[in-house]
Image (tube, rainbow, N blue to C red):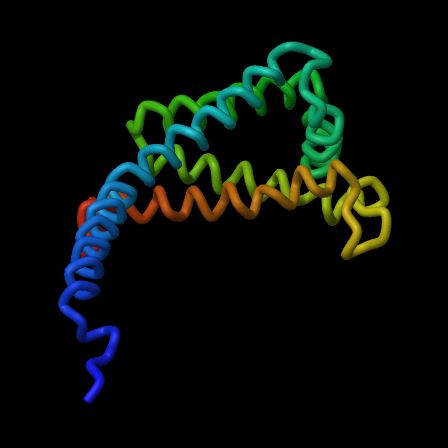
Length: 169
């Protein structure tokens, strides 16, 4: 009789070594991944927020201020909305980078993301070349926020220690 490949002791030893290495790598990724995600997301928000403090540096400032103006029915103009948005995004970035006040930070992020998505509906001619499937560069800039929301959700799942419970055995 012929012994199967999987039952061969030489291959079993290699497979066991591979499993131990894979388990160790996966556990390290589980421990570090959320921190790296939080810091990276924080850096993006801080960077984009700071750009909005300097007139003309943010490619999103015109669309953002027009969106806020339309959402507030003209009550909040660019002179107020841009510095407020800059501070808002910078605060989100600092909260994520520091890891402090994460619930409040993630709430601010959620509200900001809702506002950031509204140009897709308010200005479809500027955010799509063919609505709803061919976004412009501005539309792509907005749509990629789905990934940022997903990252925020993963971070939010850890505020009660979820990261400590999701290690791989």
